[in-house]
Length: 374
Ligand code: HEM
Image (cartoon, rainbow, N blue to C red; front, side, top):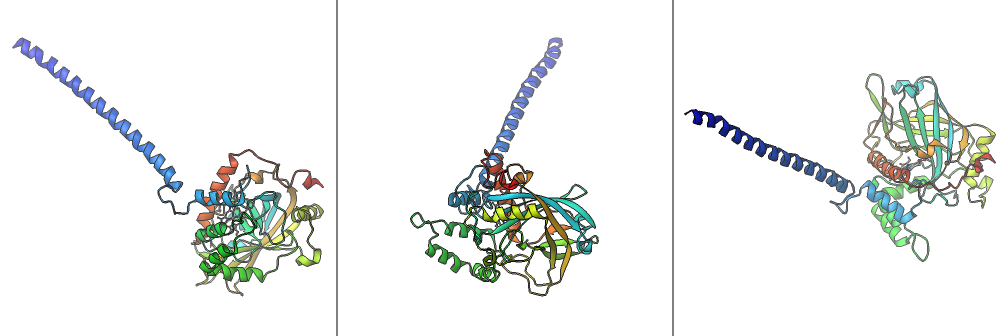
């Protein structure tokens, strides 16, 4: 009995040890399986984001790949609006925006601004063209630490209603190997499939471009929601209207110089600060907020909320603006995105372009530090 009674505990110790070993083995297996699941999930997420599960789905990776395939790949440069020059200045708010938005930037006062003028296209060394799309990216640094970023162009309507239409246009505009021009048949097919682009191009053609960057109007085009202190929101589109008087293209004549638009901008800003009024256009019920190809009807209320002054110019090579992603969804409290499908697409695609260029060796820009000191 004694031995039995002595044996019993020792038997149970052995079986407990066995069970513990078994459990430890199982929990190791469970942990390993868990790690495997996590690794598979991470790989799956990468494949999903890269569009590997849906070969025809338009992803940011695929969009930026197409920009590179059609325009070329230039180390360290933006995949669109690649050619540019950087600027600094400030925004003086007159306080009139506070009735529409609680954003700190609209309180009376001055906030510093850093920005970048650019031309549309993926070649950072392309020759300046009067017909090229002119861009202006701005970052407002608010007193409470928030930022407001916006990237605007000199077109009164955007030619593409959604990212797919823009992508299809990039595909259709690939230069033919022999003629070095887009294939007219492909472009005609694109336009036939996208009647809204045809309508937007009519509006664009009716606004002759000005002679330079300094007297260009820049349009935000996408609609946003301005939210006031009570939480009431208003659909808004913004525009920068130049104080510099409009001059038609013919008045100054197009120069043959490769950088004539940027050179003129630099000369102008070195002569005197450049100024624009920031004008908000208020949408009404029924005005489309999800289609940047359609301008809102004439006569909508406009509010001048202050003036932008740009008083210094710098090459991309020395300016921190080179490494800013002018993502249109970097917004302060008081400005929210609308239902425009371009906004989230732009944010994701700019991020993809930014991630690629940030990791690449930087080549010299077309506008060098010595160009801005002339
Ligand atoms: C689906 C639509 C669009 C696509 C795919 C697209 C694509 C891009 C890309 C890839 C960049 C370079 C981003 C970077 O590397 O930082 C860029 C820059 C820019 N985009 Fe867009 N864009 C779109 C719509 C627009 C619209 C609607 C506007 C104007 C209202 C605009 C104005 C600009 C400007 C001004 C820049 C240059 C900003 C800077 O200097 O960094 N884009 N775009």
